[in-house]
Image (cartoon, rainbow, N blue to C red):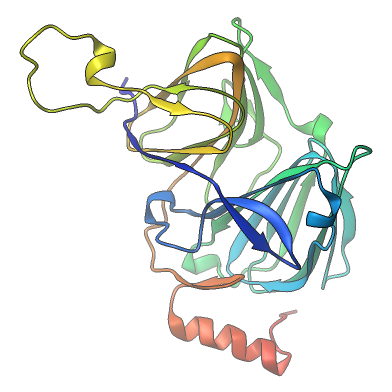
Length: 300
């Protein structure tokens, strides 16, 4: 078994999106090669209703899948296919935009005014860019949770982990999307297939992610493993990007730690991206926006 080195640790940045929603962006709209097949991760956590109620009014998507995971409050949605509904605390919605969809997402707070959720964008391979749009909506009770002997809990939003499979299937990126909680002071090793790109995003508590990399120089005096492989401190809103390996190790702080652990098989395809549309070439991108202007964007 080989521990994954840590490429970098970043803090999600305040961002305005939609009609003025205040959120934090962990990554996106830059060089996302290290995250392939994922494009963007937004943390929309807010206790001030006026900072999120304007929501994300009608807008198009093509060439991607969006994964919305709600922890508090609700997100009401509607789309050009006539679908409408809402997802609440613990629910997940996986939307395959494919050839094109126009939809809206309007967050609503809980009884205290709190709203919290994540949206992850996964790229579609060239062969599926123009596939038919579809939704997979899963309610909280249908998302399996496994617990280890030391109290570590893992909700399996998508993919397989510790012998159980999540309810979302048929996703091009073949992702594993986990919500992991490690109790205070515990150290946990979690498997991640070597061929996948992987990252963790901390949203509660703090801790340390152990690092397999270290100085190449031979020390002149005896040193411990921790000296040559310094761990990465991780607290609320920290994103940890891992290099290749087949496991990650985390040590929870005094209050425990809770984080998303996401991995997927890289597509290794060219990306042409502008706003809500992601294609493989600039010509395909121009065509998509030309179709929006002409009213031929939606395919039947």
